[in-house]
Image (cartoon, rainbow, N blue to C red; front, side):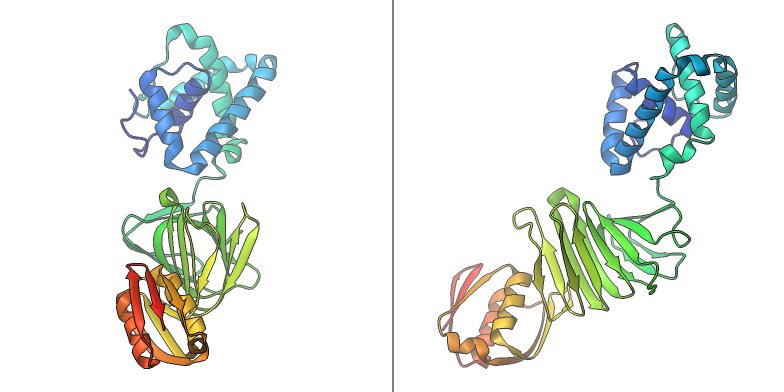
Length: 325
């Protein structure tokens, strides 16, 4: 009997046996549906399944080489599985096929183990939680967020992957940069404090740097940008290109701080943070300096404040469009 949900724990032997049944078209309807759902829970699962398919293909090509050991292989595998709950039913008529699978699995559990599980995380954190990593870095995960720490972290790499929202405080290392994978996008860090909101379902990404420097790399578009203190990067499905705002002190609270900043630069940050458009009728206003701090105000309140400071007037066209004149 297979588990009812793909995230439930399953012994490795039983998992790989089920995956073999799926690849050999021997799975029943329930087992097939389970694997289909399991594939979608993590991108690494699809990679693991493809790797197992390659192992099975190799076993089929070299069937004569392993045939003599299948009885011993089956006995060893059966012995292992006897100590754990029986999750997969094996049909007697397919015993010869399963003997070959058993031999493959024993290879997997031995020298070939790295081939299938190399992409599996070393550790997983589910928010809300404060994750303290081996390199001294800390990650504050918000609710419904997930952080996966790569195998060999701190020894061979400093790689993690994130889904959701998290604040990072990363220890510096010039020779071993901290790398965060966000789908097909990476954030490389040498040492800084920053916040990321990545929602793969909505294709939404926000990266805000409180201090230090990070590089955001989009491998699909072959695009990259370096963010420094107070910079906010945003992208989504409607506007997939990198959009950058500066003078942002807190991404979540929409806090902005301007100190004798030209209005043109101020408006660029405000329009990105609030997702609005501001048309300036009197272009002489664009060079005027602005000294102001905003935290959580509505877009209209921000525009109204700017107009009063600059001795100008504003007109609200709609909820997302304003005029300064």
